[in-house]
Structure formats: C-alpha cells, structure tokens
Length: 483
Ligand code: ADP
Ligand code: MG
Image (tube, rainbow, N blue to C red; front, top):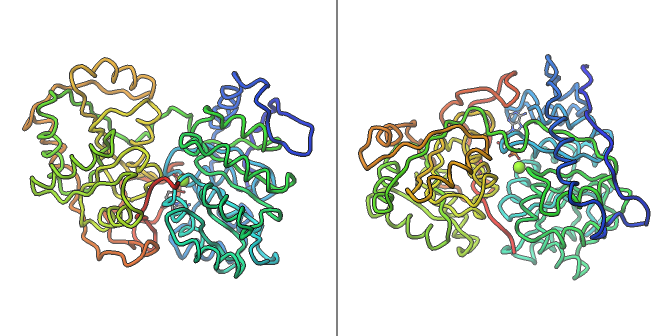
C-alpha cells in the first residue's frame, strides 16, 4: 500500500497545565498565517499516483462493503491523506474545499476507532461539533448507515428540535453525538449528556462556528472532554480565533489539505454582469427561467423573501431560506429545492453554509458577498464533489471596483460585462443547464434522493478514480444555524 505522505511540520504550541485551553496572550497574531502556511505546504504535496482503496487505507471490511454499496468505491484526496493519521489516533488539522469529502475523512476513522467499544447511557464516546442544525443532520445521515454494520449508534443534538427525543436517545445509549454547541451545552447542564468519556472530538467547519460566535461554547465543551482524547479540526480558514483553538486543543496535529484557502474550485466558470439597479430584478428573473436548479444569494433575510416573491410573480417556482424561518419552513424550502419542486432557492449567507444539494450548477450572487471568503463559500455550493458549475455575480455600477478587488483576493479571473435584460450573455445563462428531474417530496429529512439526477460531468476532486453517478449517492435537503 502506498504510504500517503504526512506533511506535518512542527509549529509552536502551548504546553503545560492539565487543560490545553489557550490563554488570550501568546503569539496569536502571526499564528493563523503560520498554520495556513503549514496547510498550504501540505496541499502542495502531490497526491499518490495510484489512489489506494479504502481497504488499503486501513478501513475494516464491513465499512468498505457499505461504502461500495453506497457508490463510494475510491477515496477522495482529503480522505487518502487524512485517513491513515486519523486511524492511527493522531490529532488532525484539515482543510479542503467544499465538496471535497471531509465528512468521511473524519467520519470513517472515527467510526473505525469506536467499533467494538462499550456503549454507556448518556455517555457518548465521540462528538462531532458543527455550526448548524442542518449540517448536524447531514453529517448524521451520512454516517448513520456506515455506523450500523459496526453496531454503533449515532444521534443528533441541535436546537429547534424536540429536546425530549434527544434526551431519550442519549439515555438509550449512543456512541457518537453530532451536535451544535448551544443545545449540547443545555443537555450537559441538565446532566443528560456526560462528555467525560469522549475519546474523539471533531470540529467541523470551525471557521463557521467562529463566525456564528460559537467558539466560547466550543471551548467550554472541549474542556469537558478528556485532554487525552483525539481531536480533529476542519476549517476553511484559521483566522477569527480558530488558530487559537488549534493551538490550545490539538496535540502536534498532522496537517492535511487539498487546496489552498483561496484557490477556487477549478471547474467553476465565473461570470460578472455589471447591471443597473433598476434592471437587476429583471435580469435575475430571466436567469431564473432556466430549466436547471439555481441558487441565489442575497444579503438580508428580508431581501431573500422579497426576491423569492418577485420571482414567484414571474411564474418561477422559487423558495426562500433564511434565519427567520422556523426549522420546518427551512426544511420544506430545502426539500422543495432538492426535489425540484422549487427550481430556485434564494438564500442568505448563514442559511446557505452547509447546504448540500447536488446538481446545483448555477450560483448567482444577487447581492455581493461580504468578502472574498464568502464569495468562495457561496460559490462552493456549486461544482461540488468534482462536478462543474457556473457562478454569476450581478454587480451594480457603483460596486464594480470593489467587486474587482474582491475577485482578485479570491483568485478568480473574470471580467465584468455590462448587460441589460435579453443581453446574449444573460440569455446564454438563462438557457443553460439540464432540466430538473422532479422527485417525490421527501417525507423526512433523512429521506434522500437516489440516482435520477443528471450524470456528473467530471471526476472526483483528485481527478482519478471513478465516481458514482447514479446509485445510492445522496444529496441532502438541509442547512442553517442553530441557536
Ligand atoms: P465537504 O464536507 O468537504 O464539503 P462532503 O463530505 O459533504 O464534502 O462530501 C461531498 C459529497 O461527496 C457528499 O455527497 C459525499 O457523500 C460525497 N463523497 C464523499 N466521499 C466520497 C467518495 N470517496 N466517493 C464518492 N462520493 C463521495
Ligand atoms: Mg462538510
């Protein structure tokens, strides 16, 4: 088996004290860039020429079998890199673009290491912390079928859902809890969840948890887990306090990355339309007539409702998703989008983080993103897991300069074209994409769309090995922040 290289370079870390909790002093300023550089170096390590199989990477046979049955025959690049270290029990700091397969990169080693252990009521042995409810559900739905053959139980803990049911599940005994920080803290406070026996903790989308102000809660929860446990942290960026988390809670982590923090997904086509304020809605409506799924991004919750309504008035089946909606309304919007009953989804940034719907081949920045990172995050909702996608920015004339600077920071090469409704460049987008295949509405969050979608147009992120196009691959309806 080819030994995947482990680009791990020493970096200064705090030592001493029973808790590895960081203090607010220390070499924090350059720390983020230190870590980013180490990750950039890790990303520069070439992938092995022959991609090892999941079995060769050390996964147990029952797990390899379910993966195959679910259409996952070859590991993605981040999985090839992170699995051996994570399986060996090392702490891991990982970075990979959206859709690169991080969930299995941490999920597979986690399940493998938990297998065969003892389940104790209200005392999970592994914890995955995520920023949003829907991401929690999504991680659960991805891992639960893999946990089953290993006789492991996975449950979710997040706000907006019945606490009684969550307590009930915990009391019956679970091995892995996938949680958002706020609700987990509540359950810990009520003594319904004991974190003292946690062997493995995963922080997924740590940067997003930082954005939502969850880092103090995350730290408090980490402090309740044994300092001897294994910790894996995944984040697109290491600023806003994520670096301190790494330094304080990860022991000599192996660094694994598959793309630099600012490198856009290669198979994304970026277009910039310079528009007048008055023509913006009409151009959006024209684009929205396309036969395929389109995801629009707007700045405000109110703006999301308004644009969805404006599109509906022109006959486009559009839904809005944002933080003011109830959990069930958000779920319905995503379900409708996933099943094709709403071909268009209008989302705010927070609502869209973690949204995972396959076959979104067009993302439209209706309002500009706050910065280049948000641009990449939003754009990352298309071209997932190796498929192709187009990203269109509608930019008002007074935003053109700022937008140009933002694109430069994002490493995106595109020139603004001035357009009006009916312009050939707009028409081209409006006619692009293959018609959505309407699927029955899903009765529950975990009900998934099977094959049915159009085949992917390109390979997996590491550019080798086949990937399933139909079969039991999943795409999930869900998204958004917890309390
Ligand atoms: P990320 O968290 O990096 O954004 P995900 O973990 O959500 O990405 O994975 C994106 C998609 O790719 C999911 O639908 C997942 O099931 C699929 N996937 C992950 N690994 C593989 C693999 N090795 N083969 C095929 N599909 C995979
Ligand atoms: Mg993910």
